[in-house]
Amino acid sequence: MEFRYAKAPSPVGDLHLVLDDADRLRALDFDGFEGRMHRLLGRHYGTVRLVEGPAPAPLLAAIAAYFDGDLSALADVATETNGTPFQRATWAALRTIPPGQTLSYGALAARLGNPKASRAVGLANGANPVAIVVPCHRVIGAGGSLTGFGGGLERKRWLLAHEAAQTARPLDLFAR
Image 1 (cartoon, rainbow, N blue to C red):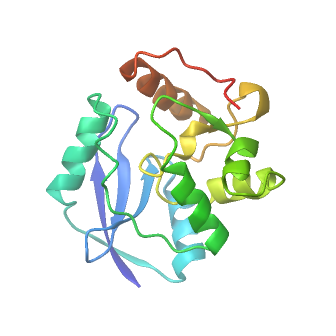
Image 2: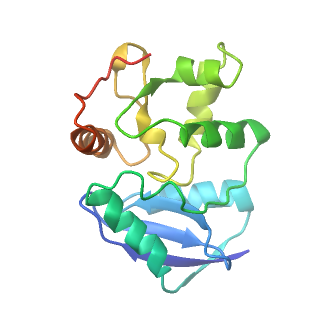
Image 3: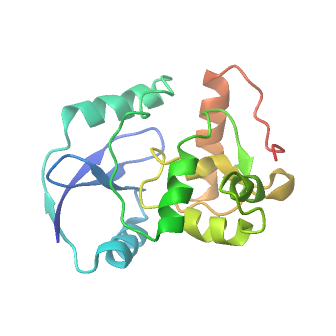
């Protein structure tokens, strides 16, 4: 399988973008985490060849707008992921968490109809290949702890603070 690879600048470092021929985002990861990105691509698609090419202007504009404070800018970014039905359901549910809000793994599991599946939600969250656009950073541990983020906890903290500042809401890490 062959995908297009590009980079986009951001306040949290360069973003690594993987796109298909229809300009759907297949992966978005952070500088320094390319190994993770390649592992996830391999897990989801098998052997993958990345060919450098331009990112579509609308995607770059949406990313820039998000970081400039328009938190809704990523809502219409087309993604395409491969994974189990549970993973895809989890990733779809992630996109329903509003910017500036957090949800615990258990609360997300309950939204998916299985309140005892918090560990499975955590595993699916960790296998999310499309960071930020599929906002796995909005999921936190019980009691508000910042746990597990493929781009590192400092980036997770930055993203949550960025979203809280734009929504004029205090950052509530104790949402359930």
